[in-house]
Amino acid sequence: MSRDENRKLKFLYQHSGIDHRYSTIPDYSREIKNWRFYPQSENLEPFPSLERRIEFFNKHAGPLSVAAIRDCIAGLLPSREITHLITVSCTGMSAPGLDLQIMELMDLPKDIYRTSVNFMGCYAAIHALKIADAICKSEPDAKVVIACTELCTLHFQREPTIDNITSSLLFGDGSAAALLMSDESKMGIRLDQFYSEVITKGKKDMAWELSSSGFLMTLSGYIPELLEEDFRPLVTKTLNKAGIKEEEVAHWCIHPGGKRILDVVHQSLEFRNGELTHCYDVLKEFGNMSSATILFVLKRIMDASLERGQKIFTAAFGPGLTMETFVASCQEGYPAGNS
Image 1 (cartoon, rainbow, N blue to C red):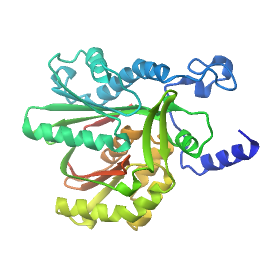
Image 2: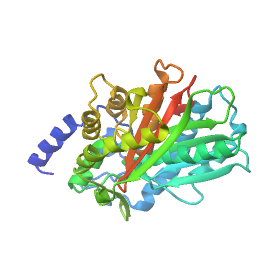
Image 3: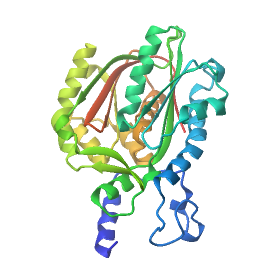
Image 4: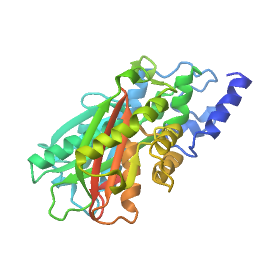
């Protein structure tokens, strides 16, 4: 990379709104002589193959997911009482996969109901919540655990294209879990209404594809413009479906896909009083962890001083361009954990 390219990259990092990110790959904070995942060479040859990256995912995603789940259900129910497991990831997949790894590591019931949400990107946690909500409504005794685990830094690409640079400065690794129950104690939040839309004109502006050297991200600079144009109408449609007005929303849980995205949402909704503070804080402390990120933000909101009955509006964005939302009501306690 040239000196001019290095200068541009430093500028982008300084204005990313991100102070820290985490990775399961220790090489990023080590000298070359101590690298274990990447070859100990300046040109990174031989560059890690897709097989090597998936192998690494299979080794680390399971224990990270279990840590998040245990944090989530602590004090709420023993793991043997989990009836349904939904795993979410777009950064690694195999068969048998993450769901069976979690089952074995936690010694979950052999007859547990399993499903996986794969390769849907940053909005996938909301899709998983939608599935879990439907299960709870049809099965009153269900105790559904969702595990969103993303090892985004596994897919670093060395060519200094704008897509690769953007991905490298935005994405980090993380895992988050949520527990959904049809429970008379009404702990946590109640999911009231879901709504989603696809902006087809943004289909080519956000994409996630497999290659022999890892997954390749397309992340166009046009995405914030699309959201600026379409986000307020999305909010209006969601709130209309939920039967509430915008002024009734006490908390805004927006996926921090990047600082520009949050800035556009902030401007679109004409916020003035730090409504997106938790979103900016998660971006600052963890970066974009794909599907896990929105649960990190939701946990921040639920850990704050909430009042019973307050409304939470949640939105996340991903390939398609897909926009997923839900409206929830605050109860007591919280069902979300992260690690």
